[in-house]
Length: 178
Image (tube, rainbow, N blue to C red; front, side):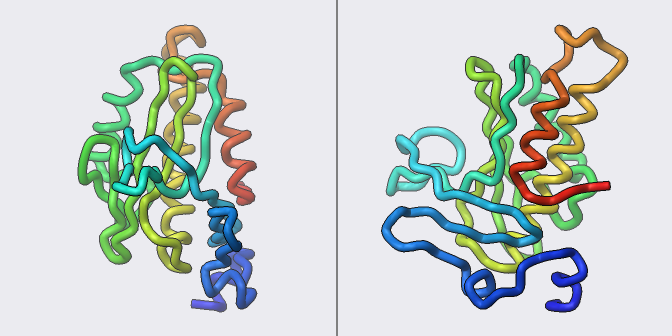
């Protein structure tokens, strides 16, 4: 496993392997596949909330110029269809997915008013779970990129636009896909 992680350019430092928790700031740094996640404070509403009022770990936030409300419907079908190239991930609820072998959970949050698509996870950070979460994030970003660049619709009619928002979100993950 360590050889594979090193080949992918993943940090194998002791701090990373132990979860990399910081002190009282509430931030969690888990750099699986170069992915930087942050603990998000929430109001207790929305996807992935728990009783403590935390939504979980924010994996990425894509800030578009516009997001259509029907994006949620399309992503539900995407989840039912197997989550693109993210192996082991299956839709388990309203815009939620779970990685079968690790049990890692992920939620897609769409805010039409703010024109954002956010991926969060309520699962505790772990080496294998974070690696799988990073792969799932890449598959979701691939889908969003395809939607933002489709030639079948004018830019103002696309479910999300522009594709630069996907590039910025991908850069925030710290992983380059060729």
